[in-house]
Image 1: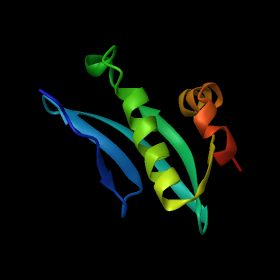
Image 2 (image 1 turned 180 degrees about the vertical axis):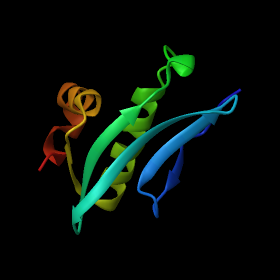
Image 3 (image 1 turned 45 degrees about the horizontal axis):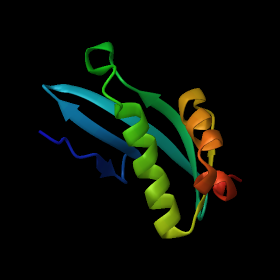
Image 4 (image 1 turned 90 degrees about the vertical axis):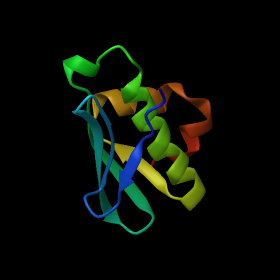
Length: 92
């Protein structure tokens, strides 16, 4: 079964709930046209499923569609962004 990543723009978070357990990514909007990723949280019960990568990938897809820039204080998201060539020009 595929569990889709959901986006709650009011709470500024991306999330997925599996078996009642939530994995999520939070971000801030310090200025118009920019998202700053603050946390990527995957509880141990959901670990090893690639959910962190899926959460970061979803926000980056949305950043690209919206023609925004991104920054991150989350070590996990920063690492993925740095390793993904197509995201290199999006950092601010």
